[in-house]
Length: 165
Ligand SMILES: [Zn+2]
Image 1 (cartoon, rainbow, N blue to C red):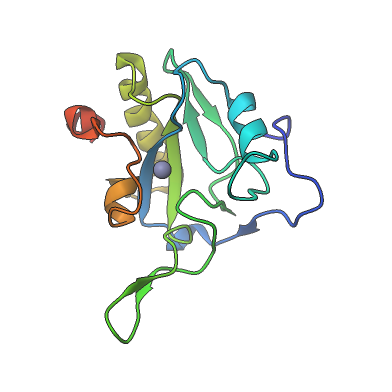
Image 2 (image 1 turned 90 degrees about the horizontal axis):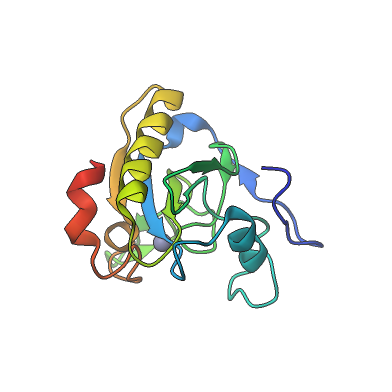
């Protein structure tokens, strides 16, 4: 969304072919459920973010009332699973390297734990993406695809996860 804040003086995200996308990764933003797309973009592109995101990292954001906000296009290679565009793979020793950004889209709800409306919104956002791409992507929590490197989407994710599938 062009009205959201962007980081000045850095290259924008790259793009990737839609055909390589296989997963929808589900995130939380942490913080209060009342956060807005603008406030999250301002944080991620501001001086306090540990990663110098060029723009908001999530392709879709689900607000407290379940409203879905579309941010970068699905072609945009955002950094929602770490800060890189190298596709994930196993190295010679069988270690997981790279990021999952290349082959996934990122959807997030505002907050630490989702409201009932956000649980519905996350499912609808994932369904909309499948419809847009004409495929059924695998839905995965960030912590699962990133092999435990993050607690995202929250410590209570298992309570609501089945409702977005
Ligand atoms: Zn995440």
